[in-house]
Amino acid sequence: MDKGYLDMELLRFTTAGSVDDGKSTLIGRLLYDSKSIFDDQLEAVETASKRSGNEEVNLALLTDGLRSEREQGITIDVAYRYFATPKRKFIIADTPGHIQYTRNMVTGASTADLAIILIDARNGVLEQTLRHSYIASLLKIPHIVVCINKMDLMDFSENTYEVIKQKYHEVIDKLQLPDVKFIPISAKLGDNVVTVSANMPWYKGCTLMELLENTPIDHKLNTKAIRFPVQYVIRPISDKFHDFRGYAGRLSGGILKKGDTVTVLPSGLRSTVAAINLCDNELYDSFTPNSITVQLTDDIDVSRGDMLAGDSDQPVVSQDITMMICWFNEKPLQVRNKYIIMHTTRETIGIVKSINTLVNINTLEAEKGGDSLKMNDIASITIKTAQPLVFDPYKQNRTTGSLIFVDPNTFETVGAGMIS
Image: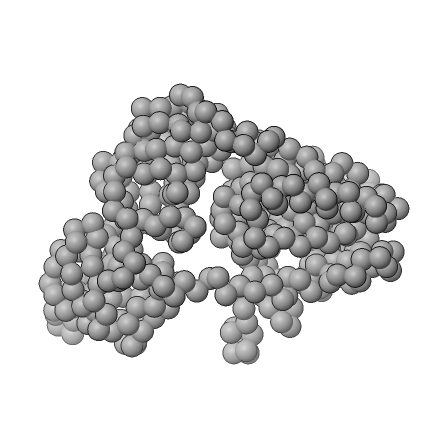
């Protein structure tokens, strides 16, 4: 395979919006117009469209893979799709619009560099628009594109576009969203998706594809604070590697170099990086988010769940942690309940101490918290863990600042936390 192709930048983006806003159709249009689908896929979609009684090809079926999704015409699970253009590679997470699948939107958006929020031009800004915008803000997605869809059903009206754009600016101001672009589109007809629309000459901006190809993604390289959660201790029993002791994991922040002084947390022991290995190769340095094996000069106690951190800009080590949480489960979160907390490579038990505030999704304001959270609630809570966690605020590091809640009885993932 061409090395240049392998070295191309990768942009991960997610789609979100209310039910029937056209998320799956938009992604189908991107895949179709960028010639990123195979002939047999197109034939299968054409057949499924005719079976459903559609007069034309329903491009939404390219992403709605579950039979129940195709029958109901909705997205239920997160659908991941891959495509590429000569400039960049892309991974799309098509997330559900229904309120009961909000947890799937959080899952799809958690690794995104950019979020596309669709708004139906006929309906304007809805509650789900606010919910998904809040989640995008909470997950610190650096770039947001508001696609005002179905402009063909509003006679491609510039006034309709401007009214919705003005209304969404209120959301931008409340949530302090850093980078928001607006595009009027028709996903069904392809206007302003890959090609410039002849129906909206009043719009002077770029197409969605141009924006996706040129959005900067340099935020991925966190070059400041070294963070290396230890996933596995390697001690091969062989003559060739008789004294080898390495710590395997994935760099979650910074650039690690041979000779760097590091602190092992939570113990506080210090040592120096003796070697950095990638398979059989020894490296002088390694960048986030590479997976590597690190050797230290001192024979000290380091286990799975520990973290190697650089001398400057140390992380927080604490058992009392305050965070924003999205609750996923039908069974409510209760104050004083215990949950399995999974954070980087560490697993421990945590008890909910308090629900501090609850987000009113209609006003985007924080209200006084109670004793429980129901499914899809977003709130600020404080927990106490059995073992100390080593973390950063989520706004500084999306890996070390996030954790998940697991039900100790069913082992279901029931919540996602972003540490404040």
